Length: 524
Image (tube, rainbow, N blue to C red):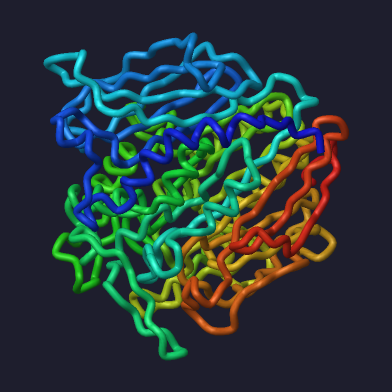
């Protein structure tokens, strides 16, 4: 692999993160750094970067009070020569969060940055700077790319456990020095309260850090915001955010389990029964707590393309906002499907225009794995496959249309990445095994959870001919992170050969499965 080394990346963070380490669990433990006593703004929730390209990136921060966001960037750790970017005024309307877009950056370079928060009434009064670093995408193919993906954080009541070291999976991911991290959804569990302790099957106890907002299901905007802040109490995640840019998508638990537009909840835990109202509040909090390039558009859409140089385009899907209602999913016509007509048209156009060697389709739900939704007592379907191994029905019709399009337009190098099902697996889809045959073979890789309950492997639907080449999953449901089965995936693209290597990894970084794919093939 010709992935380029940047030996200064770790050292730049030592000083800046030593200061921010004191901010781990700031509200939960009631601690505060000394500089906060001066009355200057502080950034106790760390920094993040997102949607980085060859020449741009987004930087995020949260203040503890009204402040002006200022970003300084430099090619070196010393900041002897730096460029200053004036960001937004952070106030209560965005929960004191803000994002600044950096433009005109050099491609394929390590960017060192620090965020300062200035008193709006006296710009000379600034808080302690919080530093981070990221690499821009390279315009040179030979440099290669490494990125990671996973999903599902703080689910099923398994939160930040100090005895367990918190979200330790981020340490293993950070050690691989990826160019970026793709989170495939369920960044929070707004529908999953966190109790102070949970009894484990072996008689031991899982302890959670708790907050008021995580004591119940999220309904108000303040409660959704509190769910996003909860994860930022973990020092491992904050350190990872300061080192590695993200590409973020959402799934159901950012709002509530298995939701769809227009749904009216029967869940007695909710006083607000309209999912549309909850989704609007969740989307606002989501847009405030992540640096995402499309969320400031009038439609606030999550789906987008992130172009990462000549080797890679990432097509980030939203299988939640535009879907039809969950049902038995066996209808013979379905124009809306799981993507909606507009998003499907966008995806076809973007795939057709892409000249990248590899086209990663970041899907928040799997294609051939059956994901049921039995919340109302009916045998409804949550994802695409409904278990009927025959010709496409329901939402499968839209996926069949897309796969046919890829084949007939001769689109090469498509790979599907997803999470959602809380185990890890690799599926190869082959027309010779399928009921629907008008497509070229392709791979779908599943990884996750990051820190949530693990579940048995999902059943396969043979409509598109999947073969499960590898799987690791528990036999019991809702296995805690203490029981293992926490996963992430790695993708390496070699700059010389163009080969793409997928590795499915366990929580500590151990490689479970490896698959090498060759470039230039229709489908893959």
